[in-house]
View 1 (cartoon, rainbow, N blue to C red):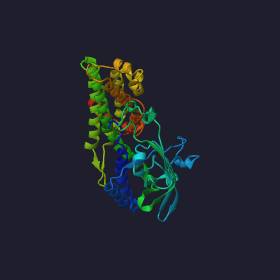
View 2: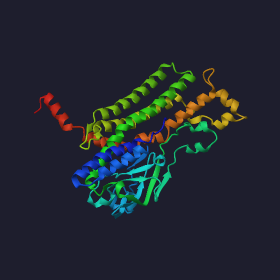
View 3: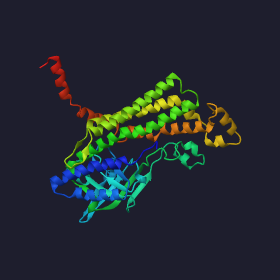
Amino acid sequence: TGSCFQRCVGLDGINAVYSVAYEIDKKHGTDYLDRFKKWLAYIQDENLMVVGAMTNPKGDRSKGPADQLDPDQYVHVVKRCSDGVVIKGAKIHMTGGVNSHEILVMPTVAMDERSKDYAIVCAVPVDDPGVTMIFGRQANDDRRDNKERIDFGKLSFGAVGGEAVIAFENVFVPKERVFMDGETEFTGSLIYRFAAHHRANYGACKTGLMDVLIGAVAYLAQIQGTAKASHIRDKVTEMIHLCETLYSSSIACSVEGWPTPSGAYMVNTMLANVCKQNVTRHHFEVARLAVDIAGGLIATLPSEYDLRSEEVGELVRKYFSGVGGVPPEYRIKIVRLIEAMTGGTSLVESMHGAGSPQAQRIMIFREGQLDKKIKLAKALAGIP
């Protein structure tokens, strides 16, 4: 599609919650996993899309959930009943939110007992009373409203992942849809597992976007007569190399995965963080090379309105022609596609989706087995 598939966040949340619910049950004698399995069977039977809702507004980021001036900066339980809980707060950056049927609410930071009310995992239908969605704005998204559809760049699927703010204003969640409530000691494990699954997915996800972008610049080079130039071929080769590097990294995360006590598998967390760290770089480099090959047209191309104009349309067709026999409109369409895929939301998602770059670097250093590496080096150097 050349855009966000939107289902991965829910999938990654499901994988994380499944194994953690099992471990909570083992320690506390709860029945979270049975509840979760019933909900999971329901969404599978109905083929429902789930948005994994983890990121909170966070307010004052120097303070934790329980210390905020506004307690609603993190989703929390405001009332407990025999048949369920009432939650309040918001989730932001919710990819796929407006296109989903269910919201899987999860905590976003590891918590202690002071934040017990914030340690909530539950499933909420998007149309429940008290749920409000506010759709995000992106660069050039007003082009969707224009009659000149070519200018939008990606007519079929758009350029974004349906990101939204999801606000919960005293939303009641039935007991059978609650999968963690107050077990703060498991919040860190849940976040750790979700992040690893999501970061592993990013390598293959962005490979799909890059496949489309590589195809777009390769076609543009063909129709403007530069495809055989050695420097163009070299840049396209580099784009393919970076793309397939991410794909192989994503596969490695799963190949080296392991079964948790619940039976659900966990990806290799080191490789997952390496994979996502590379996404924050490789996607930008592929986009840079695409802009290099495409040239200034990305920033200066006249609109479809001008192309269709009785006054200047003929001039646009004349001066934006390329290889003989190829309609100028084809060149304009492919340039607009490249523009849509190299600016705005798609690159921001690669930088900050599944955690900002420093989050991966912290985990890479933590899991880098430096003691083992130092021991090996000292042994080979003859140092006791």
